[in-house]
Length: 321
Image 1 (cartoon, rainbow, N blue to C red):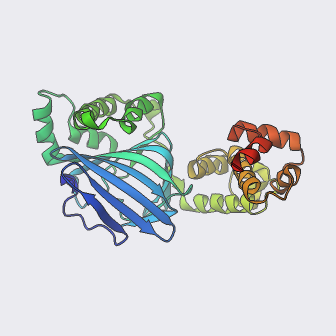
Image 2 (image 1 turned 45 degrees about the horizontal axis):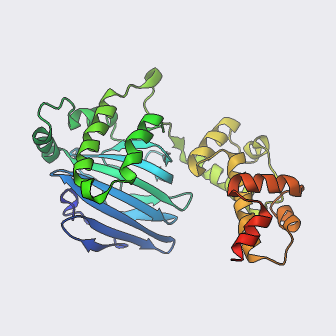
Image 3 (image 1 turned 30 degrees about the vertical axis):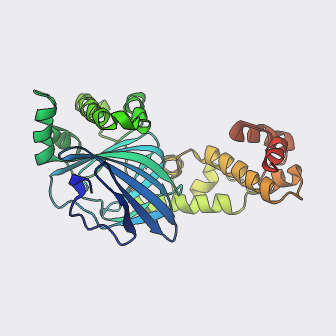
């Protein structure tokens, strides 16, 4: 087990499947799917963990009981929804970064898109700061300073996706094994320098939180939109139906499901049609297009090719092979 995670009482649906001097691999499984977490020690007090989940939710018992933990998370793909005790929820989306003390980690973690892929750098401050002095002498950034800057109210701080964040983390997802440990060390210090230099724009700190009632209304709207693809709703109609402002509906929907309402529904319709093209070969393309809400086959074909990469005819032909 990575040093920083020793002694943690993991939940019942988590099992260690590989444990050696190089890494620890854990599996999470419940009735909605499964996920894997691969952890590596970087240096004493610091670890890196890769997470891949294909499930609707998972439960966690872990919650830090002091201020000695600092975790930096990056979302490569998917969305995570966390509910806080004060009636708010926040969303961790593709490209985002969070800085967190794990004081609100216990409970249910939701994956609105049924998948999540990302990486976490975790530090046990007393041990990690001693190690950092040995790694790079006179390194100016302190972990306690980073924690104080981003975690003053103990809630997770979410930094919106940016080119700078993408540059730092994209390289972490394709590290050759033979240079892995040394490369991890370098990336730790690069990330800490970035966070130390990051300035808050217009006094705002991080992405906004949403009232849990807003999230519930948005999820109800998504259910309505997807249960009958022949029906088309405007933002104004949805806002009125669910008693939520249009701005809140649009912002909260994008945070929850990873894209604006219209883009989400366009992708949902086309992916539903793609599944039909594979399974329902007796139905014509025009019939399938109509069943997902397209009156025009030519428009359906154009959108299908843009999203899937081939025309519906080519897609169905390729699936026969």
